[in-house]
Length: 147
Image 1 (cartoon, one colour):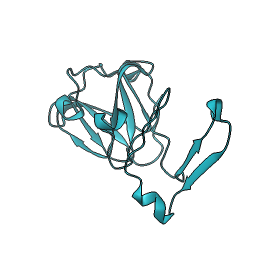
Image 2: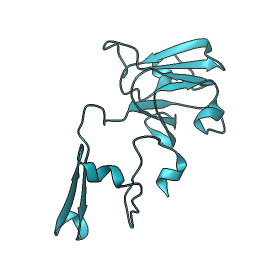
Image 3: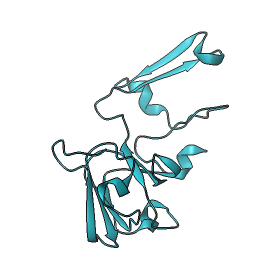
Image 4: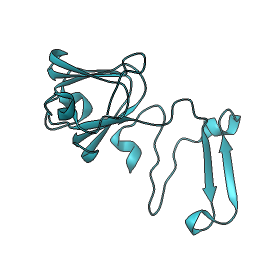
């Protein structure tokens, strides 16, 4: 459940343009109803970090990855409805970037490693993943990043 641990990270609003009832979330929140908030979310203010929000409780259903900023209505996070039931922070802040490309299945074989801060890493603009996996750009978590 979400509990206060310093500065507010996410504020969820029942009304568009940050109106009506507000739920403040500071860490994983598996069910908004347990906090006395209906699953109707029409605007979001992401005050800190990147978060994954789900349209059902218990981190189930369609997910939305949202970065810091204001989302005045559900169209701004590419949703088709105001239904949202849970959210959790993306565990990447404060961690160092490291990308490993392995030759074999199940993470075996020779490894090519890219580390944060290396000049050649800045020239990587796209990665294709074949099989099971996910990749995205740290600048935007848009749909084009999951092709």
